[in-house]
Amino acid sequence: MAKLVFGMNQSLDGYVDHMAFAPGPALFRHFIEEAQGQAGSIYGRQMYEIMRYWDDEHTEWNSDERAFAAAWRKQPKWVVSRSLKSVGPNASLVEGDFEGAVRELKAERDGEIEVAGPNLARSLTELGLIDEYRIYLHPVVLGRGKPYFAGPRPRLRLIASDPMGEDVIRLTYVPA
Image (cartoon, one colour):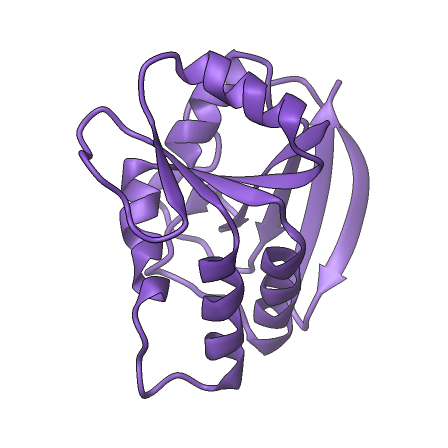
C-alpha cells in the first residue's frame, strides 16, 4: 500500500510560496532524490500548472535542474481538476469520484506518493488520507500568503527533525 506524503517548503510564519524563497543546492539535491524514488505525485490544478515548467527543456538549467526535470517527467502524475480537459505527458486526469480514485491509488501502488499543494492537501486531510506531513522550514518570514495548512489543522505527532542543508530543517509528522 502506498503512503501519501504532503511536503512543502514553508516560511517560519507558516506560509508556502515558491516565488518568495527557494531551496539551496543541498535541499534541491534532496528533492531530486525524493522525486527519483517516489511512486508518483498527486496534484491539484494550480500546483500542476506550476510544475509543468519541468516538462520543457531550458538551456540555462544546470545539471541538478536537468536531473530534477528528468525525475519529474519519469514519474506518474495524477491531476485532480474540474476545469482541466487534458494534462501533459505521464499524467492522468482525476475526475469524478476523487476520494475513490485516491483510495484506489493507495491500494494499488507501493512506495510514497507525493501530495503537491496545500489546497489538495486540505481535501485529503479532511478525508484522513495523508499519512505523513513534511515541513521544510526555511528561515524567512513572509507575513502573508498561502498557509501550509489551508484547512483543518490535524492532530499530529512529530516523528523526525532533520537538518537539510545549511539553514533548513525538515519536520516530519504523522497523524496522532
